[in-house]
Image (cartoon, rainbow, N blue to C red; front, top):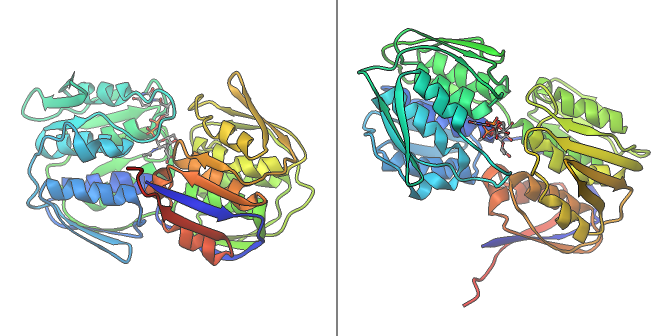
Length: 423
Ligand code: EPZ
């Protein structure tokens, strides 16, 4: 196990460059196996989830190289390998192998997804979509068995009862080679969905409307290789913007697509954070007189659920009471008791997180419960007086590319230490 040790209270300044979007990469990499020739993905983040997916693809027979954020995937030797358990369970996004293996082979055996604990994370909408395409789906001993009933999936009209990023992408991955047209209604609109649709269309698919709530897919016979430059990570960018506002003394965040962060930046401006927004970078100035604001998360383009935790340390620096409601994951509150251990005046009341600022934070030993809770604790540790030790940091390494190096370059005193397992 690894832990992160931070000596907080230092003034942070300088530049940080945002890496490729984790929540794109975890879909683009499985999607590449749909091609009948090599796919080159550029701007790929060097994070644990990417390495886990590379391992899975290699088990299936893909030839892979990954250096300087360029991932080359040669899927020509891939065979349909049942993956009921093992590495497949190490990340939630493993469910994308259901859609891609159905698209490629018309069948799949995939262990139920793992990943962060954010409360119940069903995949009923994924299953509903596959069944609408003529796929028989059974859950046997924690693994999903998917078989196309005829010799090919049939396009269909699918209404998503809940706006779901994963289900929207997964159905897209299965439908690109189905016979006829598939229409996904009430589709999620996240930028990562547009990124996946762009890759698929570069591979020869016919996907229209990605980024809106109606996506039309006309099935094609074959998909070929291509080169694709993926979008930067709006959640990593939001995390560093929140850090810059809370603990920064002038920090420039580079490689940002402003449009992907409009609701988050509007919230920072509401708090009173001073920023200079350029085409692909945002400079955050030292801010004073910050005021507490309320936050309610929504599907894109609303305020992202993934950013309510990283924003919390900044809210602790503001004057007043902030109320946070996560309408997507009501149980995404495991960072609250850890922040309280650091002296934060924060509590959960019903479906609301109540934050009273300003709170003076002191170092403590804390535990990361999920990826974004971990990022929240890192920011709190950088703010706190004294030493903070964060355990379970494997969560953080799943989604934040070179976080130790990026924070050290900003002047942070932070190191990652391999915990020697007790005998
Ligand atoms: C994606 O998860 C992201 N993960 C999550 O980011 C993000 O928090 C989430 O979207 C919401 O934006 C990846 O992209 C790998 P959903 P996903 O399906 O696709 C319910 C991070 O920190 N639902 O959009 O799993 C679900 O319970 C991670 O990077 C069903 O009811 O989320 C939730 O309440 C954490 N049935 C809501 O929909 C289903 O079949 C949205 O979930 C699927 C989802």
